[in-house]
Amino acid sequence: MTTATLSPALPQASRSAELSRIWNVVRLHFVNTATTIIVPWIVLGSIFAINLLIWAIIYSAAAPEDRAKIADGTQWSGSIFYIFVYMLVVAVQAISTTFPFALGFSVTRRDYYLGTSLSFLLLSGGYAIALTALSLLEDATNGWGLHGRMFTAVYFGGDAWYERLFVFFVGLAFFFFVGSIFAAVWVRWKQYGLLGLAIALALLLVGAVALISFTNNWPTVGEWFVANGPVGVVAWMLVPTALSAVAGFFLLRRATPKN
Image (cartoon, rainbow, N blue to C red; front, side, top):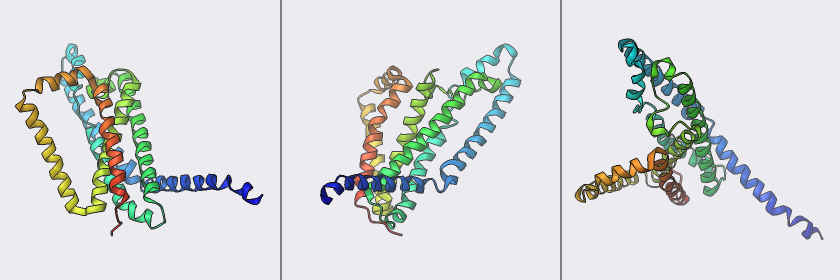
């Protein structure tokens, strides 16, 4: 009778403990907010301030009838691309510094990676929402009163807010999970692993460029980008993002923490 009463509760208790461990890993990644939140926004704010000054100079120098054309010239701005690459660095730092610490508190590798992945998705979602809000504000103020474009560049989708939110979120998640591969390789094989990975990626990239060049398929590549548009291209990025997430897990599963 006692066994029959206690048995159903055991899986539930185990499940709760697992979720608690995963959430503790998430909290661990948010302890140092300077790296994940404060510094990126300080840098982004500085870039925005510099862009404002540049737009103001262009606006004051342009003839009144030509000022609306400033938006056409700034639509190709890559001012916030740094934040995507920076998230790759955040992922590397987060895993390489917290992985040994977390395992020291009896967190399993599986729980650690699930908690880390959830942290990356939360950060991607938070940044995507903030960047989308800034893009809408940029629209509402007609480019901050200067016809400038930083958060509404052509790479971030059309006028629909949900397209921009999707592009920002997937782009950030891509760099987070690619970063998890670099971090897992570093934790497992240190500098020799990273060196091998860098060489393999370089060979793969140069090989792809050579294949496209030798087969004269650059126009086809360009047509593919045009046909898919920013949202379609970013949607395809979900494939390498998912593959990177799975690869990061299997690489980290057998990694041994080292100081």
